[in-house]
Length: 281
Image (cartoon, rainbow, N blue to C red; front, side, top):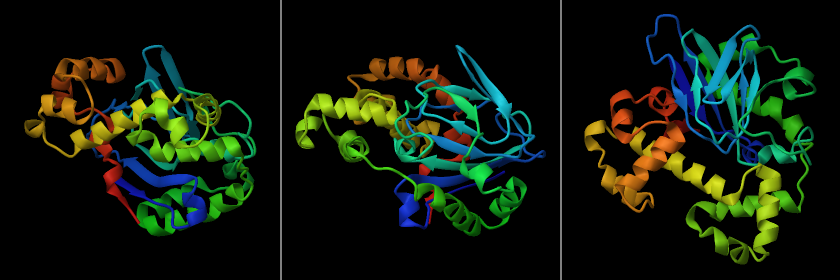
């Protein structure tokens, strides 16, 4: 299995894209066939071979298709079908970044949705050769990222920045270490204006986004430690939960399992494919 995460080299691209990533499961690899993907406030563009199937399951239904697709912000935990060999090359956008792209500007961003790539995106307009890009991703990550920068640049040159996107970017910068009710005053605008702009750009409330960011930070913390090192009472304290039972209820609601089940299975995508700490330049 090959996997890497890298930041864009172009500052103009990095304004909108957090990282590029590659995951491949080869036929001779035996790994978790149905890993769980935790809630995520960011959008991913997932570039895949045209005939490669994908499937995302939740308690309320499933999203399936073939080839390249959008994975939009999702509050639900997805179970992925990784029972067959696959390769995915991903573009992880910053939260709310799609709002500035011409195809999405002024539209409500879909949530908890997977959608096949179609229409006038960079994949169709630039006549992208997915197979050639996959070969490059396998053999030369740095060159692949340079190619993605080149492909994305004409797209982002058409971006539109308005007051909603500007105030949302400022809010995201302070969100994880601020009390939401005082964030408007901190940014010198009314709380109502901030809330409306943030939801318009991201599709999420400030509270929803802050909660998902906290969950991702906690999962990164868990991923970096062995099961023997996990002190759940200490983890509850470090991540702002009132006590250990509060943390247990939270994990069961968000991910569908208890801490003990997590220790035994380690079945999240972060456990199988790595975390954001793996990002390199």
